[in-house]
Image (cartoon, rainbow, N blue to C red; front, top):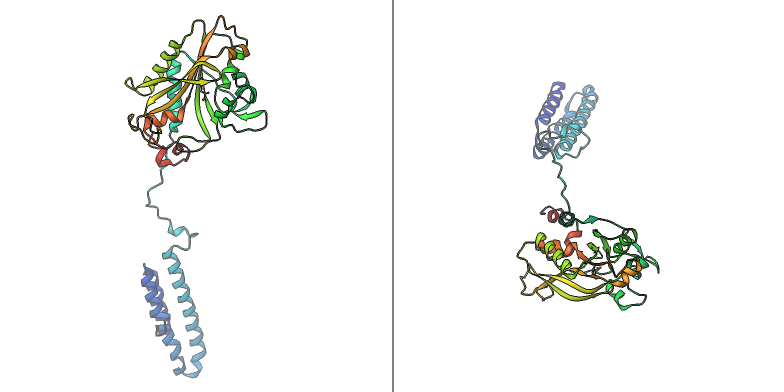
Length: 335
Ligand code: PHE
């Protein structure tokens, strides 16, 4: 009799050790501890044993039943992987996870490209604060207080007198306060406007440019900006200079590029005009020179400011500006 329960124990443990699927283990559970399982039947038959053997046989059979039930639980845990602490279950044959190499954001790439073009043309590069005073953002640039031109610049105010700069033009003033002509400088940076749709985001990037020297004329402005556009896109790209207004330049011109998405036919990106504005520009206004004590009888100059996102959209044919700021790696890794 004891041999028999010993035998059942050995069979059960051996079979459980070899079981490799949940189904197999469940079948073994039925086979040994189910309603008609070998251990269950053994326990049921104990009453037919001689009286003096019954207590020890019952005790042993119950211990074996417990043991087998425990082993069944362990085997299930092992296979279902629920015992995550156990080191037995690391699959050393899995391929390793490669680190994904970073790339420069497309806006940084365009910024670098613009900087390189201007470096070759002999320009310096300067930067300045994103939190500006009313004086540098507006007043010194010939936007008097309460002048309607301020409305164009959907401003984020920090306080009455402090703003998030709405353009990089305040750097024109900061540079001219510190340096004497000749000046040839570009000033890249972030700017902020309270505006958000398909072609506007509350933060975007501009590159400002400023040239001041003797005998600088509108032809110099046209030459530099045409070179820039041709180097960023290609020699064939059409551009037009459209009369415009900025308080700090006179005359002023906006530079448009033929819409590369619709090729001039009209689409939602170019608001059906066929052209996309990429630059504001003009000859530095005498009032601005006076604010930095430059002698207007000696010096003249031109300035321009361009939207980096606009240029990236045109160059890569992207129709939604917001994609640049969603940080979706599937989008960003294409550049
Ligand atoms: N600062 C102007 C803007 O953001 C652009 C500009 C810069 C216009 C320099 C003329 C000269 O709209």
